[in-house]
Image 1 (cartoon, helix red, strand yellow):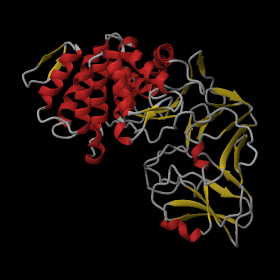
Image 2 (cartoon, helix red, strand yellow):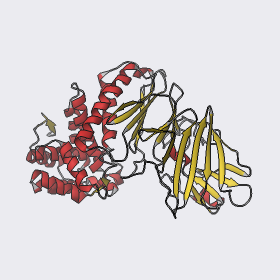
Image 3 (spheres, rainbow, N blue to C red):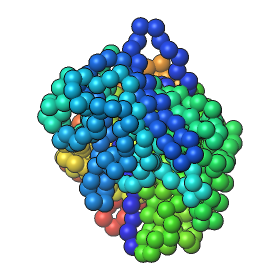
Image 4 (spheres, one colour):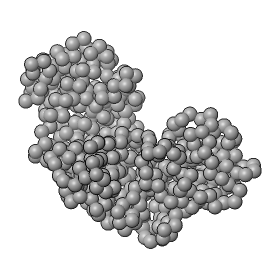
Length: 467
């Protein structure tokens, strides 16, 4: 038996465009038009400039076999143009000179796991397909020979002085993008999926859920009842998202023997998950809680991570720890059998072990990313107990105060803590843990929790345990 949960690879920044995009005079555009007609798929690329090569930055290899995935699924129909592998990247090159300004490709959607990127497609058991938009992302180079010298990871490469506009249409009917169905879906946001097919979504005022019809009944029931309640709670407490309707897409890879797998990722306003294995056929309290926990944490990022985010990577505790505590509170409300103290006590213990003479902010340099989650949750607990109000209220105040620039800095978070608790010593001590840690973090964090009014007792090791 094995467990797989893909990490969050990238989150679109605040204000990413998901609505229909109008042409902007004077701004060059690369247009990618993707269409399905029956079983045939095509992608038409309309470039804004002559170039010797157009490079696909999302060219990761398959998790099983380690092979480039486009070679067997994409066929270039434009004469004199080839799709080649150069170093770590797939590239359009011409037989001679620059590429033409229009290139057409026939392709078959690839629903395989990649080593460190999102699957190019999600396949549903009724034949519906969700395509990952960023697989069509590209940028120009003046020489194909220079591609091999590019760094191995260019996932966030931006086309200079140009805008990539993606259009999707299906001859069989509307497609689903950003929680909305349309005959032609248009976006400039590459970090999302667009759904082709007849799978009927479950829609509430706060969310859209696309659930594979062959999902085990208990998973389908949880996602269609508990998850809408989670989204309703977040929307009520944190405000409605202005540019996207939260969407969840969940596919079923079948009852593979000996496997318990929930692979998932979060993008801008979208969570994608794939369940697989015989171990998923029967409901257990642990599986139910884990499924709700994953959704609740990633959904929290729609507000704390996308509506507002942190300033520097060292401040990831603001969003990761914050999302942890929001998820703990939300799951406890949705599932009465869930004990929030278990996860919070684990966060307290982990934060203690990761701050001995080391600051939280330098955790990335030590490859101790867990510190951002654990200590961030502890700091959220301090804000919640110290203010005497739910953590939802604290986060809502952060969002409302920082919507304009979409950034919550460390100083702004600590100032919000001072305003909420009127105890400046709490932010002072958190700043110390962020900067340099503590020589005796058990005693230091116990004192921090005590002054915040957190109800706990010390175990035999001197570690705080919530009552």
